[in-house]
Image (cartoon, rainbow, N blue to C red; front, side, top):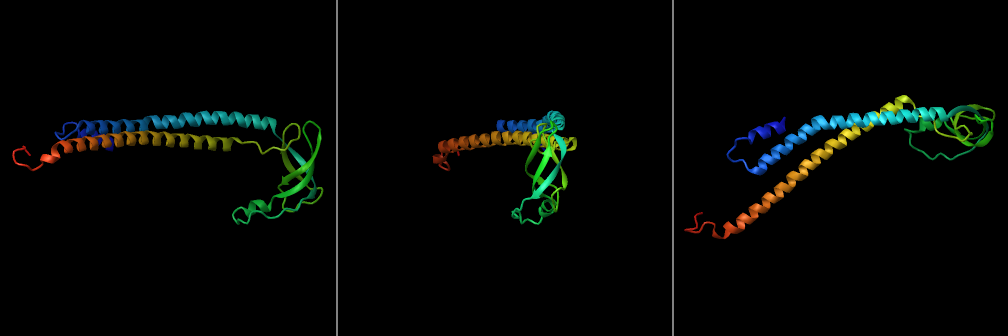
Length: 201
């Protein structure tokens, strides 16, 4: 709206310079791009990200398996995180030596993080592995994928808007510098005779 008002104001103004009209046109084009093109960029980016992430969800859910592991013994570990905000999450996790059987039937043994507050030998806990028994992270779920895609869309839209506005400001800044340079040139020609009788000033 501000761009439209500025453009309309300079249409028939007798004090209008060519750069004023160019600046008003730039503001109008930037406003239209931000209103039309930026949302399209956000939607397209979000849609593409969502599609790619859903493929990752399918692949991870197909390739990662939730099995049951057995605690052999707890491994003592120093408390590394004194932050009280993260301590509740760490209170239900322990580092243990465990054994498990992979989906392909092979037996494994190793040190893992178990979601057990006070693990004891023989306790069972869930563990995510690949088909060969290698420990992997929990697979991505659809809700998380959708959230990440939405954030990607918002981020792309914000970046596009910043790019458009930054380009407009850069062009206007260059125009202002050129205007000042022309003023300096005009003053150098006029300045020495300023106020003298018979110079027409």
